[in-house]
Image (cartoon, rainbow, N blue to C red; front, side, top):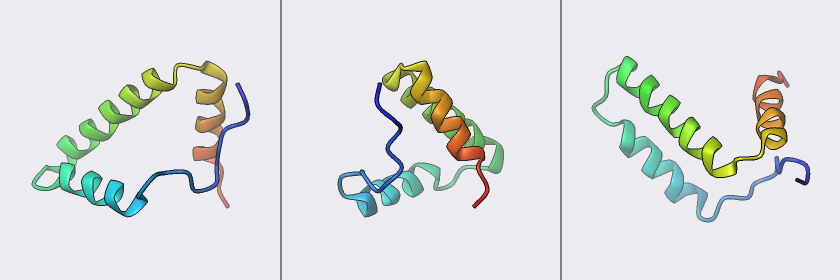
Length: 64
């Protein structure tokens, strides 16, 4: 697989962000954390490529 895309690449990002915020509305911190964990696993399964997932973990851990 090609290198992980780190530049903006989401169709209608503002709409996605609004959907994400709405999904968390009314949840406790624990419920919100659990939703985030499930979302990560669903998206990781969709991606499926271990190399891309490893790159994503590295990118997420990087401190700018």
